[in-house]
Amino acid sequence: MSFRSFVAIIGVLGASTLTAAVSMSAGEVATSALALGASAPKAAVKMKSVDGRQFSITDVRGKHGTLVIFTCNACPWAQAWESRIVEIGNAGIKQGVGVIAINPNDPKKVREDDYANMKVRAKERGMQFPYVVDATSDVARAFGATRTPEAFLFDAEGKLVYHGTIDDNAREPEKVQARFLTDAVTAVASGAVPAVQETKSLGCSIKFRSKS
Image (cartoon, rainbow, N blue to C red; front, side):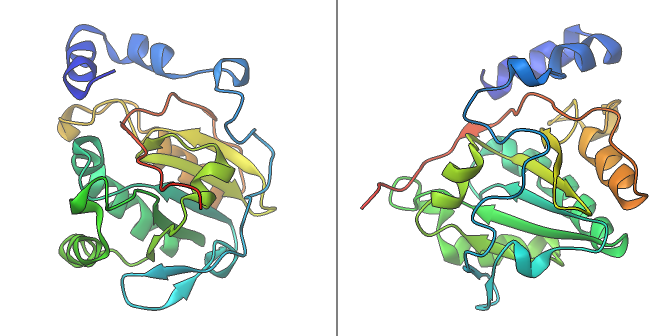
């Protein structure tokens, strides 16, 4: 589905209809995607952050949960949601939820997704959490991630409790009615299970690095 098509759908459907269209049961999610209740794979893999330090998913684990977001610089979907992703991530840290943004894209395929541009975007947006390079794309592969952006939220026990998109309107934030990721982070921070646990991930396809 293209970005334009998604915006067209939003313009036609009401909030309740769109929520139903976006929300998915576990059986409708690609079989390669990480299942609800699973632990984060490759959690100990160190990845280079925009500040030059190395972080793993385990390193950023929060008291109440951990949010892992696969994203990038160039994708128009990622750009449209970027401010909200940063807002959710920065707020999550204050609520005891660890956050890490991971760029799995190969900059040889999309030049704008290189490390230099990551540093620029992180600074411009005021990211207070690590934005790291998945240097082999193997972390994304292990998660079964296919899109940018794509969110995976784990609870205090390290179990996956939300997987999917950010909200129901990428282009027009003022018209958002279903704040899937915000609501999920708020639930996890309070020790609750998110009301919506899976939604369809919408975005650009990940430009995976070639396996050596």
